[in-house]
Every structure is written in structure tokens, then in C-alpha cells.
Image (cartoon, rainbow, N blue to C red; front, side, top):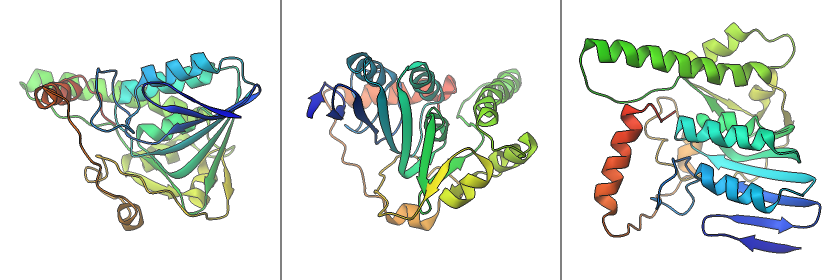
Length: 243
């Protein structure tokens, strides 16, 4: 066994037949820098999958507060295309678009004290009435695509309308609750990993136990990062990139 490193993330415990991949951070778009080293871009996942394309078993560990819709969907689709047998473990929380990424696994395992959170996509914008009407229509189309992922992973007998109600309400499901609706395996409670995310204070119903386990993320910005960061946030808002 050995650890393979690249510029962004680590592939841990790689052997000729298996590898462990960690998605421990917010999901962001491809950029030249990150607010935090734990942030995950589609290019990170692509590079890692290219390194381990011959492994038969891929263990994916997730602890993420969510982030960019389109980046998350890209990661989901890349993982789905992987020919490896994929087992996803939600170590603490898979919130928002990270809940979609979690369902890319052939097998999804969530401890009873970990969380899956699903909600409606949202964004910030400015413009006239026509702009807002188009934005609402775009958000509905994005939500429809996300609902298709949830539909493919629903437990037999569950109605899509039930999942829609949970999405509309911003619902935090612990492992035992998530098992009622989705094809996942729940295991006994473990020591949940802390998850530091920029998104927890934006959600309406973040459980106290999730907040209590978080720590403030250190920010180390390179030159010109503030200007670039404001530009990126603006682009995220007008391009509907946050879920």
C-alpha cells in the first residue's frame, strides 16, 4: 500500500485493486486557487480517477456541506462513469449537492448519526422582472435534473412526490431516516467527523449537532485572491452554481 499525492487531493491506501478517495470540503468550480485546501473541484476528481482507472474497488468518503451545482453534477457523472465498484461512506454529512454526489456509489453507507440533506437549489441575482422569471425557470430545470438522481435511488415503494416534499422543506435526514427513502445501508453510530463548511450558516435548518462539530476554516489567500474571489462568487450567483 502507498499514498499517491497530486496538487489538490490525496488518494489513500492505493493498491493494484482498490483505492480510497476523500471528498472532505465544499464543492467549487474549477479555478486556479481555492479558499481552503479541502475544497473539491471537478478537475480534482478527474485527475484522481485518471490515476486509478485500473482499480476494481473505489471507496469514496464524503464529508461536505455542498456547494456548486454544476461542479457537483460533473463530479457525480464522472464517478458514475467509473468502471470501479464504488462504495460511498458518509462520514459526517453529505449536504445539498454533496447528497447527489453520494448517490453515485454502487453502495452507499451512512452511520445512524451522520446526515444526508436535500433542498431546493437557490442563487442570488439582480435584474428586471424578466430576468427573475427566467431565473425561476432555470432553477426549476436544475431541480428537475437533481430530482432525477434522487428518483433513480429511491427505495421501492417511495413516491417521488414524497421526496419532492422533503426537498421543498430542506430536510436533514440522519442515517436511519435516509434509509427509509433511499437505497442506502445504515450502520451503527460512529464518531462523526467534523465538517467545516461555508454553507452551514446559509441553510435554514442546519442541526445544532452539525454546527457543534464544525470548526472555522482557515483562509490563506494568494495575491489578488480577494478580487478573484469576489469575481468567482459573483459568477456563481448569476450562473446558478450553488445548491
